[in-house]
Each structure stands twice: as structure tokens, then as C-alpha cells.
Length: 563
Image 1 (cartoon, rainbow, N blue to C red):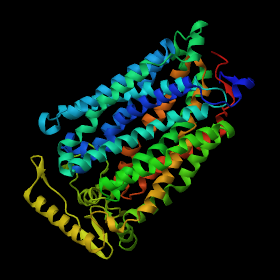
Image 2 (cartoon, rainbow, N blue to C red; image 1 turned 30 degrees about the horizontal axis):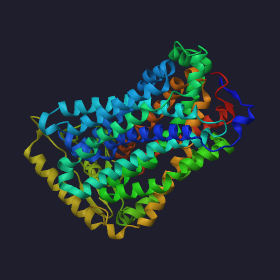
Image 3 (cartoon, rainbow, N blue to C red; image 1 turned 60 degrees about the vertical axis):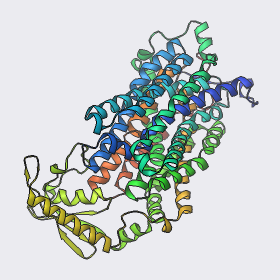
Image 4 (cartoon, one colour; image 1 turned 90 degrees about the vertical axis):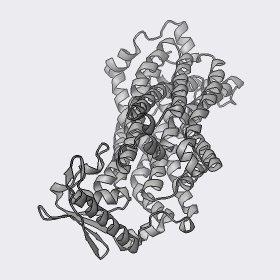
């Protein structure tokens, strides 16, 4: 690590923010809030996006494919980090994140006017994915620039407090997207919103873009970059310095696996996965689910500032690692408590009338396949599991005799699943009738066993739901509040933008961004609605071990020492 411990008492002396520092934090944070708003609109509307742009697939596959398109924006974020990180280290922080916000805002606006699959066929999802990738590239350059810019304006001993404002922006952007969606949905009604009203939140982004650009044009360059530039110390090749020299590459790798990977999965579990879990698995209506998440975000967001400031006193690493440890230990009980609070009928049915699928394992396909069609699931095992997955019914698996038909046991009821015969790319008439009869019988038996088709609002324990969701958000604030300051402090000024951006965006773009898709694929494959939690638990556990053993504490380093 190139930075050194700061001996400068003057820098460490607490003092109020200057007007210029307040302006820097406000302008950087506001622009970043708007950029996250643009990025997360898609995630908040994933179910509608699936119907509008992936209607050529069956419902289950369409939702998974919509999540993959959502993930496409995350997959390219590291490449945005490389492109814009290099520019930021060579020409400056300010102008680089002006470019990123322009790309983000324009791409989001175009989504709002993009024709659907029903209008232009396959071109619609293709264009949508391209726009998501442009958004990902832009976001890959935005966060590192904003975090670096604010940190380089902060006095020594206050970087955690100052950069924690940037850490609130992702959550505030999500919160803003939920508020705009809820307001639009409530004003125009569910039917009109699902038909065309979902476009309005995307179109609003053009106004936010104008405000962001106007504010950011008024900012000056960061003092650390100005000092480095005046001394002729700017990097001529930040990519090769960051990743071609082992002393820096080693820190990049440790920052990824020992810091940002665990932070990312805790972030996405506490906010996005919790939202999808409420709607898809617990069958809570979209308005209630979004309101509960929004309320939890509103309560939890101040804790970004609490833990960011606390990290200036006790260190960044202890707070981040504790958040990951708590996630590992409590995710399973927390989500089971969420089930009991949000859909007690479902929890009771699972406890008293568990569902078991007994089938020859050789005849069972991977249910999380996002490109599969209904006819690709033609064995009795596939037809049985497909029905349960599409209806969000958890089940256990049991191995049947080779070549046997799959049977589904619901409490004391047993239903034999049919096989399907495909002729000319569709099920033949006999198969269609047999499958329809099977689905009807399953629906009746599940209803008799107490499995609800949707969560009953009158039976929800909303106070308990809010408490659990707020706890999940507080875990997010623990791992995310101090992380910007720590990433900035790990790397020297001349390559800081590039070096910190890559591990952050691989961690959050790949490990975090793929979480909803991966977790729901695990649920679809294993059958158990809680199986998806293994993904964040394993990744967070890895970060705890590696981060605790190998990452240094950074709160006392002097980030100006090498400028």
C-alpha cells in the first residue's frame, strides 16, 4: 500500500465543514443519487420488464431472463471502471464523471421510449440489453470518480464521515426510484401502469440529468489531483501501473475478495433480493412490497453516516467484517421470520403440509435455465417441478426408481405427473390435456393444503416485516458506509481512480449484480425458497476470512503523502 500513516495533527483536528466542502459533497452526492436512480429503475420494474420485453418466453423463464438483462448492466461495470478510471487518473476527476452521467441519463431516457417485444420482436430485448450495458459502463466510471473526488476534499480523520454521504446515494437512488414508481402507479392505476405508465419514471430521468450536469459544471477539480498535476506526477499509464505491478495488483485482488465481494452480496441481499423475495416467493403485492422496502430504506439510510463516521474512530475493517459476519449468521433465520410475518398462511402450509417431489434424478433438468421453453421441460419430473417453480411453491427432492414417473406429495395427497410428447415444436393434444389436468389437480390440492395464491394483507405483521427489512438494510450500511474511504486509502493518488474502481465494480457488478439471477436460479433448481441465500452467505464468509487475515486497517493513512 503506497500511502503512509499521517503525522499531521492539523489534518486530524476535527473542524466543521467549509462551504466549499459542503458544496462538493452535495453536488457529487446529488448527481450520483440521480445516476443510481436511473440504474435501479430497471431492477424495481423487473417483473414488468419481463412481460414487456421478454414475452416470447414462458413466465418463469421471462423473469429469469429479465434478471439476466438486469445483470448485463453489472457485468460491464468493471470495463467502465477501466475506461473511465484511466481517464480520471490522466485528465481529472471532474470531467470524467460529467461524461458518465450524460451516458447514464440518455440511456435511461431511451428505455422510456423503446418499443416492446410485441411491437418490434427480438430487436426490443436486444436494444434493451445494449442500453443496460451502456448504463453499466457509465456507472463503472461514476462511483470511483465521486468517491475519490469527495475523499480528496476531506480533511484527514474525517474521510469516513465525508465519503459516507456518497455511500448513501445508491440507497437513496433506489429509494427515489421506488417513490416515483409508487407515485406513478398509484396515480394512474395498476392496469395503465403495467401497460404504458411504467415508462414515465424512465422519462423523468431527462430532467434529473439536466440538474446533475448543471451542478457538476460548477465544481472545481480535487486538490489532490491538482497538486499531483502541478508537480508533474500524473500517471502516463494508470492501467499498467495498477495491474501490471504486483505491489498494486496484490492490493486490488485483496480489495476484491477480502472487501468488495462480501460487501456487494450483503448490499444486494438486503435491498434487491429482499424485494424480489417478497414479491416472487412470498407473493406480497408489488405496492406493499415496494412500500415496505422504501420504509426500511428511509429508516436505515442514516446509518450509512453513523458507520462512516464511526469508522474514523474505530477503523473501517472491524465494522465491515462485523456486517459480513452478522449476514452469514442471521440470513436464514431472518428470511424465515420474514416469511412468517409477510405470508403466515404460506409458512403454516410449509410446516404442516410440506411438498416432496419423488423422481428419477436422471430425468430432471435444471429449472433455472433462462432460455428454456415450456416444451423443453417434457419429462414428468420437469413438468412437476416447473409447475411448482412457476407458482413459487417450495419442495423437497427424493430420488425415485430409474425410469419411474415423478410423483408430488402434498401433505397426505399424492399426484402423479405426466410426461409430454413434443410434435412439430409443441406438445401433442394428449400431452396438453394431461398437463392441464395435472395442473388443475395440483392447484386444488395445494389450496386444500393451505397454500395461498397470494399473501393476505389482513394477516401480514407489517411491523415485524419492517423490523426485519430494516435490520437487513442496517447490515448494508455496516458493510457499505465505510468502504469508499477504505478503498481510497488503499491506493496512491496517481492511480487511485483506476485501482479502486476495478475491485469495487467487479465486486458489486459481478458478485453483487449476479446475485438476484444466481439466487433465483438456485431456488428454481433446488426447490427450496431459501436456497438462494447460500450464495451471499458463502461469498460474505469468504470475505470475512480473507479480509480479516490479509487486509490492513487504513483509517490513519495520509492519502496526500504520494500526491
